[in-house]
Image (cartoon, each protein chain N blue to C red):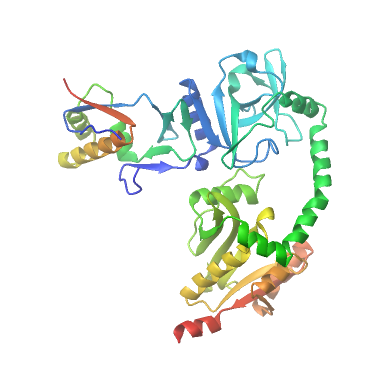
Length: 342
Length: 104
C-alpha cells in the first residue's frame, strides 16, 4: 500500500495490542489458516526469544495437546493471549507455564486454547530446539521446578565466558577484527516498530507500551537489517525545563555481543552532527560515578566531567534515593561550531 | 496485481484470501498467503472513510449503488464520494484484497 494512500495504510503487527493480536489470531485460525506473528517478551526464554517469529496452527485434533507442546491460549485471569508450554492435561483442565516463569498459569479449558506453535524463526532461520520431543523433558523439568534452576546454573557457567568476551571486546585487536569483518550497520532515527522493540528490551517485564515520539526527542538506533544493535536518545530541554535546559544525550546502550564494533561512537557521532546542525554548543549526559564500563567510554567519545551547580540539588536528591553518586559530563561542540561558521 | 479496471458498474467483494476483522473500532486486514496470515509487516488498516466504504462492499451492489448508499448516510458531494469509492476499491484491487467484476 503506498504510504500516501488516503484510505488505507500498511501497519506493523508488532504494535498491536494483545486483544487485537488475539482476535486476529482467532479469525485467521478460524479460517483453517496458520497465523504468523512476532513474539514479544521473555516468558519462554530461552526456547522462544523476544523478536522470534512464531507460526501458530489451528488445533484440529485435541490429542495433539500433550505435555511439552507450546500453544497459544487465552489466560483465565485477564483474557489476554499467551504462548506457553503445556505441562499437563488433567481431565478437562490444561496446565501451562512459561519456560522462564517461576509459576504456572491458572488452569485453562480446551476452549481457551487457540492453536499450537509449529515453527519458530530467529534472524531468518528456523529454530527447532524446544518444539520437538525434547519438549516433554522440558515440561517434566518445569513441573518439578528444576528447569529454572538448570537455566540459572547455565548462566553461572556462562558468566566467565561473558566476562571473557567483555575483556576481549575491550582489546584493540578484537575491535579492528570486528570492524573489518562484521556486517555493516547503519544509524538512523527509530521507526515506531523500533520504539516498541526498544521498550520491550529496556523494560522486559512491562506490558511493552512503546516509547513515544515526543517533541524535542530524537531516538537514534544502530541497526543491521531489522536487528537493533544500539540506542541513543537526544533530548532538547527548553528554558521552561530548568535546571535541565540544554541538549542531552541519554540511554546510550549497545547490546552485549555487538560491543567493540564502534557502534557507540557512531551513535554519538550522529548525535554530535545533529546537535551541530541545530547550532547546539554542547551535549550533556548524567552517569553514575561508579559506572566503570560507561565512564571510560564517554571519555573516549570526548565527554568531560563538568561542574553543574544548577543541577546540584537534583544530583543530591538522586544520591539520596539511589545511594549512588551521579556526575554530569559534557561534549563541547563550540570548536566544531566555529569551524562550521568559518 | 489485478488488471481489472474499476468503474461505477463494477461489483467488488472482499477476497477469499484475506481475513478482515473490526477490532476496537479499527478494521484490520490480514492477507492469507499459502495458508498463512502474517501479522508481521503485512497488516492493513483502513481510515474511517475506507471503513465506511468497506462495509458497503457486499458483493451484490455495484459501486454506483454503494455511492448512492453512502450519499444517503453522509453529507458529502456525490463527486467526492465517487472519487473515494473508486480510489479505495482500485487500491484494494491492486493489493488483491478485493476482487472485482462487471455487473451482469
